[in-house]
Image 1 (tube, rainbow, N blue to C red):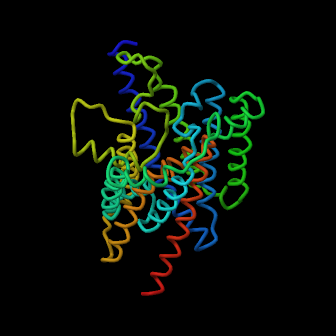
Image 2 (image 1 turned 180 degrees about the vertical axis):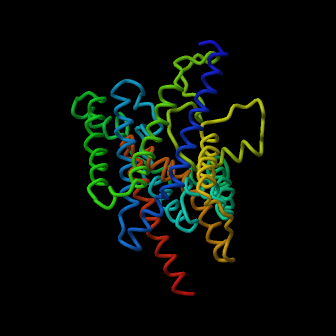
Image 3 (image 1 turned 135 degrees about the horizontal axis):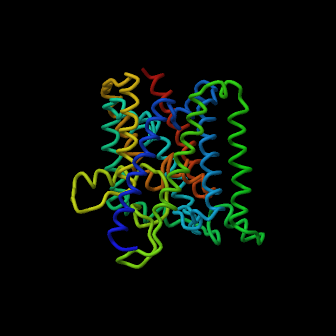
Length: 370
């Protein structure tokens, strides 16, 4: 591939990622898809409806991912989740910190972007604080703390920490077929669990959230893993996944991309090509904005008072630090990571749930004091 064709494909990949992210924002805005809301509904009301949305989305994304891997459209062993090294303490601690933060900040990273599109000024503040905290944990002060503490604790699973990879190696099975079978069992089970509830099935919004968000994650895997894969870069002569940080195979995530978006804005260079993470951030905001304007639900919203402001700022910082430490957020380690059946992602999601429960208890304690 010559350089002009390479640059044209790169632009095509970025536009495709923007379109898919736009769809994510519009669907999430319409259906009120929210991981924090799902956990809160269970904890406060005993309602599993939004968790069924989330489970169905994971199941659809998982089946889509491993079906494409089985067909040879993407290489499952090349994802950022396939590393043999499992940073379990980073995933657990970072996940818990992120879970606590998303409760205090009224939503995770993706929900923050959706709410910005709805006109929520609180979420705009959360975005800036979360982005700065994430950047510091990637390259700054908290990066040093992360690297000298939780990142030192790990174990290895050969040939990789995705369940199909080590299970097929252990049993001597074909990894592609093993992945597809597990995806159909686990992912299909999640979809059936969601559909088992008659109340869930009766709502078009529930089905749109589960099927739509899951399809968005699968589509992003195809865009990056198939459309955006170049076997030989025209300049470096090395294989690369276009538009990704470091050229590695990944899907939607929002913690590090928030930091990269701020970096792009602050150190703007017209000659520098946008990344998939940055266009995804803009895509989600604009998708939510477009649907909010269409439904005439756009409205400005600000902080209620000093405590509300402080809790959102603290929560945003926790999400930025925790999301980078855990290697992803509720979308990065949750939807995208779980779709690969990654052990690290499972640990990170466990940490997010535990942190969210702690945050909900803290909220209840604060309410009782008032």
